[in-house]
Length: 437
Image (cartoon, rainbow, N blue to C red; front, top):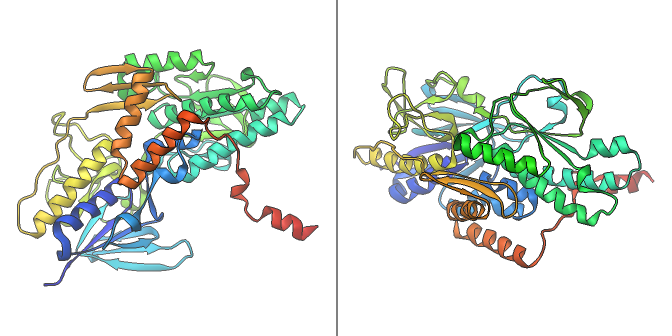
């Protein structure tokens, strides 16, 4: 019997766990191909610690080829989906294109940063969704500190040491708090600088931060960060950052060379250009069984979806609620998706996804955090410990779990490495300088 051709578009949480589950349950009955632009899955909850030097950046990514034995990996960007033709077009970084045909497809393309047409943002802004961005931010902050210590120009020093973060959700607050903690620790090596020279600014358009944690825990986090001297402006928007001149909606203006954008995400735009049914915000319209369906609830045969690019009813909350775009949901959805696809191919009934969210955890720097687990609220060191324990258990593969634990254990005896390696982004610079001399 010919194996069913399964195409998984995306190698994040959903892509990885769907492939693992389906391969385990369906075996030789499926021929699985996974497409992703990167050869690894990024475990995003650990990006703030990677940026702060608490975890080696290579340890927060999971190599797809190592974990997905028996699965064909195609490294490229999905540019077109035509379900009517059962085909997806993929483009490599070298400009080559190929059409991949399928019998069943999993839409696991995830989300991209939701940017706004703010003057200067495209030119100087950086994101915080991928490991390369975390490494870049770490090198940028440490490099700015080193340069500030070497200048006698007070205006330039102030500009170099001003770091602006836009967006007060989980990603933004954790990146904001962890990198500030790292920057403050780095100052012990720079007697020319004082802690007061550092300026970390958070801009949030809403009236509170960490809305997923509720008003009490969001308020506590706000108080803790402000006590550390960090500036947080609520109900405020970034209006311009052209040439490093920051202009806020409250009238403030100042200079900064670093702007980190963490103000939300949106579904991959390839979905909107496809012939798949979508919801009001551009997500793939998906049933609790993780099968894609029309607005009338009619199943579109051969299409499945989960994660950030899918609009899935949250049965645990009741009618009208949708599953939040979190790793907790994505991993569980992916496992059920793989099992449901295997069941469908074997002629068995599929099951609906229902999961009551266990809670949320956030790190605010070394030994500091907030957490709300099944109604229990934790602060400080207990919350930080819970954050690490939960995510260590969730990161895929024993290999990565062991490496992360070794990183943390080493940090108990040695301080984190605070060396900037900014020239990693310009590997040919020294050679070119030598050639020009």
